[in-house]
Length: 508
RNA sequence: GUCCCCAUCGUCUAGCCCGGUCCAGGACACCGGCCUUUCACGCCGGCGACACGAGUUCAAAUCUCGUUGGGGACGCCA
Image (cartoon, rainbow, N blue to C red):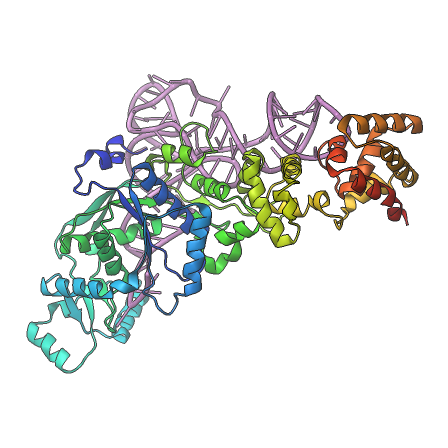
């Protein structure tokens, strides 16, 4: 799709910055959302792959919208995902003096000028242009002001913003984006943009560049929505006499209506925290997110950390936006089915000890944790998880669907009750009778319980499945689960017998 | 409106740069089968796409142009 020469320009072009340094600069105006998380992961992968550094920088210059809570949320989210940074977090607000100094320099070097046009004036011009169906760009009236005129206006105490002087010549600015290829923008299409507000505060475009220069960022990896900012930022780098980083823009993640996902309009479904609460394994989410816009040429989709770091490159990144196919109000999937599928995959393939550690946290929250699970019941605990996890999708399932394994106050699934218990009235007598036969055994083993069940079924002249599934319902509250003979043995004689005898209650 | 970007199954995508091996491959989802005491896993099979139109060519998903559709950016937000 894109010429190879262009794609590998990072490796071929001489670069004054030998060290790979990338950054993730969230603005703390809300929780960490999956789009931001994906960008962070890409940066992290790139840094790890090239032995570089990931800098975390909190862009908190919008004091009104930034919150401490949000900062903490972002940090927690990254940490949970396993995205580790090497420097920071730095806070953009602490470098205000530097941003100002840069603005002053641009002013004295003649790369910027003071603009006294009021917001109202500009607004009027914008509206007039819109009414005439034309497009508006700052007309540069203040750029033409003589030094005397500027002095005069300043003497009058008129407020001013500082605008950058975009070259007024036929050329264009361009750069080789690592994902999108050559991107160019004619000077005439760029207006003299504001870099400092009338209250003296520098704007994002400038701050961001100044910070990236100071942090010696070699590769700017960010969302495609930053693509059209890039030409202006390059102008800033040039004027500031700094070397250019390499740019790589990622396609965006869209919602079902193909609109950019945002915290504001999508709520929890796009928040990393939500997945944490819903029982996602952190790496499963990361793995899924990475696949939204990146792939390898082979058919691999499941990657360990190491494998991903090894496999990752800009080459595998698509240029088209991808849709986050979440399904709200779907009884089976509460988010993108693929995300659930990947989570389920990790849930049943990860070393059981790892799953155990995560389930422990879940159980502690649910009041299901028993200290003995870390002690004498540890083997039993892990084996139970191992048996149960095969058909679970999230960590929460252990405490909900799997509750009967660990506690006596579990819920009876309605389908299980109707289909596997009430449908066969004979079970009202048979299950307690089965309990008696189990009681006669020294302990419940897979083979013994199977023998007993089959013999009993034969005596009764019914299919063993009726007995077994009826038992499953009253013992686990579920319509599905592992082989019941293993379940008998695992749940243990006492609970099994009690629950089988209690079957009569369902017939009243 | 202006500038820019994008366009393959419902979704994520491979293939496109270097045209034939692609009546387009994989994954998820969905449907069916096998397995089975259930469900799940696993395995087997099915459904399902090159946005449209021209052009170039012996040959186009791949190259060119146009159309349409979608997205992003156009702030004294970040």
